[in-house]
Image (cartoon, rainbow, N blue to C red):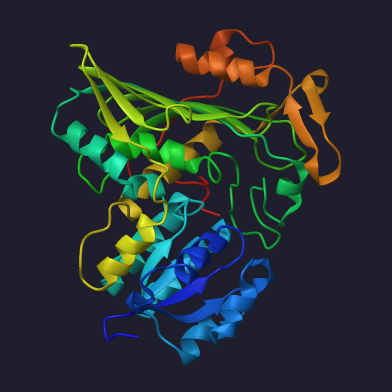
Length: 406
């Protein structure tokens, strides 16, 4: 390895951590980094575990044990949500930069703790929302910041991704408010699988290249069809600090897959994205069209950017400040839409068997799609089962989740 090689500790190599393992093992330039160690109490979840072991990398069940014997320049944290704060802060306390996988964490209090640890350490914390690092998103954001699209008016995003029984049975925290040890998780489509797309709305209209717009008011409706403690379906209306309306619709309790799709309305243009187009498109009032590219391309640019930043080259597009808006909004949603409403028994259906069994709400995909198209919430559509949430003000240091600080 060259003297400029960045040493990496991989924290979590199962689940999404497999993507980072693949990126490193298949990297064309292996001289740019070295793997200092692997931390995972259950490394069997790594699909390329034999290759990792063959490299002679030391394995540890916990991060503290790694630091008793080694150091690293960069920690790639892909551990469960409940551990993001603890693992990030521990790495920072040992002088290590961090790439923490999305979402940032479970609560606004944890976000503040991570920010304070970063500032003490003088190291960076990147958050793995890959769309934010992608060139297509960056090109769009540059045009927004330059005023080429005019002021943002309303942003709407829809993500309908069915998830089966195996998804919810894969660990002790899927769909849960807390894990089995009592740590906050707040796992839901909004704080896990589709968190990218809520974050993306805040990020796109943020006031600086590495900042997001900030929510100030949140109204949400939360529902579930699956036997979980949190929600599998969420819809929300958010007003930002610049009085822009954001609408987000996300569900795992559906029988069709759709999205992510978005429509961002500006004074001078309408920006759209859908998997069918595979590109971000801006259609201007004068009839012209601009294509920005596919935000799903090059999902590991975030890792390369962090390796460069650890060498003192380049900047981080998405850090704690940018990612905190999703956390703040998601916490506001929990308070606004809680307690979670159960879909009526006659509405709940299922298909498949065993781990492939998908529990879903009959007609739910159509309702959410209509809401997205009209810019309303299910309760405003007049749906019989819908329950309006209260408006929650999330602006300022006085907002806390949970309110009692537990």
